[in-house]
Amino acid sequence: MINIRVLKNYNELSSTVADIVEAQIKEQSKLVLPTGSTPLGLYKELVNRKLDWSLILTFNLDEYLMNPDHPCSYHSYMKKNLFDRTNIYPDNCHFPFRPTLSFEDKMTLGRRIDLCILGIGTNGHIAFNEPGSSFKSRTRVVNLSLQTIQDNSRFFDSIEDVPKQAITMGLRTIMESKKIVLMVNGKHKLTILNVAMNGEIIETVPASILQRHNNVEVYYCD
Ligand code: GLP
Image (cartoon, protein in one colour):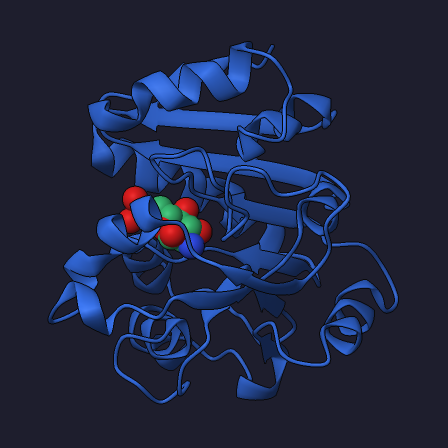
């Protein structure tokens, strides 16, 4: 069972998690970063704080199988919302790629991930680990569920434009991070959040694996 910290509003969610990231940025850290609508406020806040990202390495959780230069790719999202607005070195920003083993090697080379920030999908996915993903999974290509395609179609011109496949860190990969912070925004996610944090630890609810991690913080606002 994981304690869910309820915050007053989206601004407080963003600034609370920004404080955690900022503390980590004062060291030479390896961060895992999410996309989606939830972390937009966090990235805005981090940009405003004008931090020194020059020693930071980042690894994104996932990417669609699509041209990385496409405006809806997670590469483009990260450039637009964070990377191009800080002094981070582009070579220090990593996205999952093939061969997936090389990506994992890069991530684990030297030392473990210090901090992994996550969001949650309405079906309980973390990164693009859809319901049914193995708890032992590592970075790999996956098929997106219909639910995820529908949820994420709001970022595309039409649902047909949403890629059907993605490349994602696995659940085991994520669990190897030293610390995990889960950000959740919106009442529509409260039911799945409670199931994942307080219910059975089961592969049909991918986020439930977080109950097995010894350093997880969950922040929610509606
Ligand atoms: C996508 C991402 C997830 C993210 C989820 C929730 O599916 N792959 O990493 O957690 O969206 O996104 P949102 O914050 O927009 O609800």
